[in-house]
Amino acid sequence: MTETFRAFRVEKTDDGFAGHVQGLAEDTLPEGELTVQVAYSSLNYKDALSATGNPGVTKRYPHTPGIDAAGTVTASSSERFSVGDEVIVTSYDLGMNTPGGFGERVRVPAAWAVPLPAGLTLREAMVLGTAGLTAGLALEALLSHGLTPEGGPVAVTGASGGVGGVAVALLAKLGFEVVASTGTEAAHGWLKDLGAAEIIGRDVLGKPSERPFLKARFAGGIDTVGGVPLANLVKSLHPRGAVAACGLVAGPELPLTVFPFILRGVSLLGIDSAECPMALRQKVWQKLADEWRVDLTNVTREVTLDELNGVIGEMLSGQTQGRVLVKVS
Ligand SMILES: NC(=O)c1ccc[n+]([C@@H]2O[C@H](COP(=O)([O-])OP(=O)(O)OC[C@H]3O[C@@H](n4cnc5c(N)ncnc54)[C@H](OP(=O)(O)O)[C@@H]3O)[C@@H](O)[C@H]2O)c1
Image 1 (cartoon, helix red, strand yellow):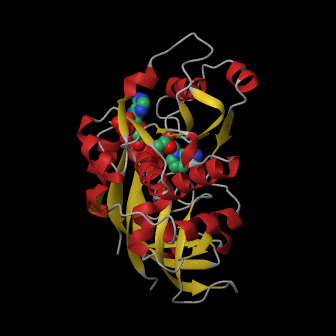
Image 2: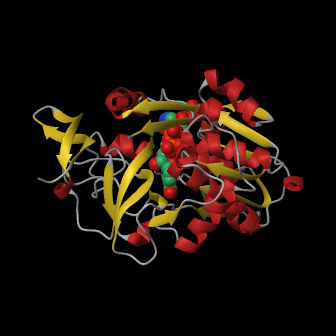
Image 3: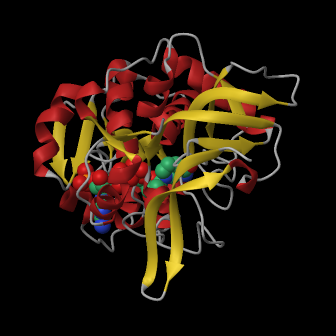
């Protein structure tokens, strides 16, 4: 008889989509070079979309969401990995249309796995998760652009969210003066604890403006929300400044003219963690384990598979703060 494992499974119902924990046979997993016993996953905005039937993320149901997984290899037909290796599996199609980390087991191509970097535990890797990787990629992009702490303040939008919180902590660790933009008053204290020098309300950058430029006040930014706040951030950059953009919770449109680009020489750097090249992915994970190591204990909440329904609802209504770690097995 094939082995079974527990998974948070989302099904299409007459009333929409519903998730619950159930036992699944291992032969329900797709073909793949690596089978991984998942210890931890984490909850990201994309998982909340997948768990509620968003067709831009997941097309086929029933489905096990979870774009993040960290665990131990239990079977491998790849020369890169052996049984017993600890790995991080994130991005690509994991948790989208491939069963993801909200199940005790995943089966994936070896090309999706990163060896757990020395210095990180499986739990710490998922405290960071895709949110941490994305914040790290954004930081790497800004540093490659030439941004330095001496250049001036750097803004982070959606600062109380998963990506935003890690971005604040990383920038502060490297000595940047961080201006955290947040609509969550309850987060002010812990954002300061993470190293934010100043906190501004979400409405400051969120106010629509017809003007092609705003007062140049930031050397750079990490934007997790898109829409009007991203446009205003680009308009508020110092000459030659740069914003790394990764998200769209405030909307996918960008109400902007070309003037900041052609008259202030600013740059908009796109961040795509899902398909980023393996060499860059491994470089950023190694930095997160080492020189960029940050303590996120106080901004992380741990939940079990059985608690996912509630916390997914909270995330979609903007009530979660910081990182949500999922203890899987
Ligand atoms: N490109 C990539 O590779 C990549 C990877 C990971 C995530 N993402 C994207 O990045 C974004 C953030 O992801 P996450 O996992 O950090 O989500 P999250 O934990 O839900 O954080 C999003 C934050 O955005 C702010 N926010 C919520 N509703 C808003 C609204 N209507 N207008 C403006 N701000 C709003 C809130 O922060 P405040 O209350 O502090 O303002 C919230 O905490 C998502 O769009 C996600 O899809 C992209």
